[in-house]
Length: 224
Image (cartoon, rainbow, N blue to C red; front, side, top):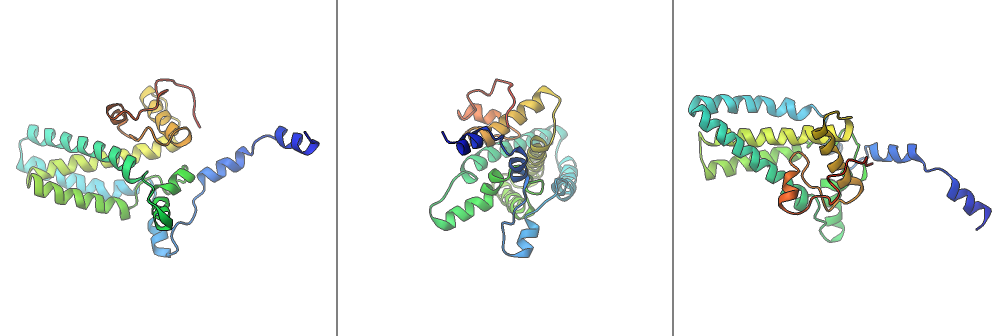
């Protein structure tokens, strides 16, 4: 081994550069407006959707018995968690062929895996969450109608907000409780060990149901 090779092997890793790459916020759209709309502060979904949730709660309790409204809202929440799992596993992680497919994958989820600590791309921008909520509204009206659709959609939106807040939290917080630490470890394993497992962010139990949990998910060793 030459002296230059030995020096290269003994050189410590550029931890600062690696951390900067993970937290970088690269440009993903050429259009300035789209680029601006793709960057979202963590509190933006709360500001946008909490008033809608409040209206849906009022409509639900005004038109339905409290027990019916609560049970239906819980059903909406469960539907969201399944949507979160299936969307993350199949929509976000499917790589379509060709340059267009690669570009689409990068915009939807690839940029997040390349720069997972980008603070302005950890919650869904309205460009993505808005159509999801509108599709949910149409499906709810077609399947159950109103007023039963009010609490169902309310639970769905609450589940979405829980997902966004959990996603931001596990990337930036230093959790204290065992449950929060477990959520963080599961998601960091998804990023830094095996991106084909651990698709549930706020609801990791779906990984147990569908057999995609990390095989070492019960261990508590640090990751990332």
